[in-house]
Length: 358
Image (cartoon, rainbow, N blue to C red; front, side):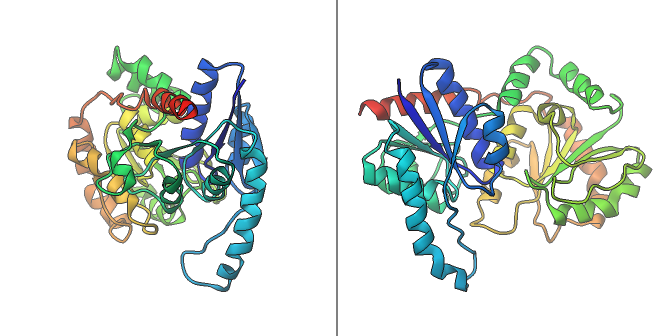
């Protein structure tokens, strides 16, 4: 019986691919054990136990984007996080990392204990934690081709899809038009009315929410239905006409399928799930970070299924001016989704099994 440690907490962008790989691992190795590493403040505290997996907490190494006095704590916090990670990693047969704050100390712990490491990079531009981990392993997988550095030679695996999105992709293959219409009705919207699905990532976006609030009357005036995921930590607006705000969308696969147009950040998971089920998207990349969200959306733009604007360009005036054009573009976009990521979890499992034998 083998034990697999998985590191990738904080946001759904790190956790959902890790959960998909864990589920695939247990499907093929039912007697094994998967243990997740996380911190007390991340979404993993909800998502991992709900999926039936064990979660071990380690101290968070918080690194502010701008220099501050908090940087003085980084060495102490890192030592503490590595020590906590080591207790789990030394008992594991392999560590699979997915990036983020949790992964960096896990990679260092695995290097110290000589535990095999497998890394999956979801973004088109690898993050700092995975670049650190790549110093200790050659077993790398990516969701997008990377042009330089160690990840340029990685296995092009795609991004593991959450189970509901994968199931919906398979089920829709026989009749995409009916699948989209049925999903719209299941969400409580008229099948013959344009539907816009708006979200700002797993935590929501106050910037996007503010623009949407200014646009509700315009959506209603044009007879456009809107499903708006505002984020659990943000105030929930009142429903108005065809505008339906929710704190969080549980039936995410239905939302992707039903929407004629999606307005969202272009995180790696959002782009992958949209690629599998969505029709047309307006992406508003997060304006912080290393620019990976702009790169994540590039292949979808090239395929004629999306366009990208900056947050500064995104305004109520932009929506009023462009919403008819965007919906027209959506009506001419392919009715089908793209199943290129369906086998991603299987590929990462195979790479992990190879790493354990190397």
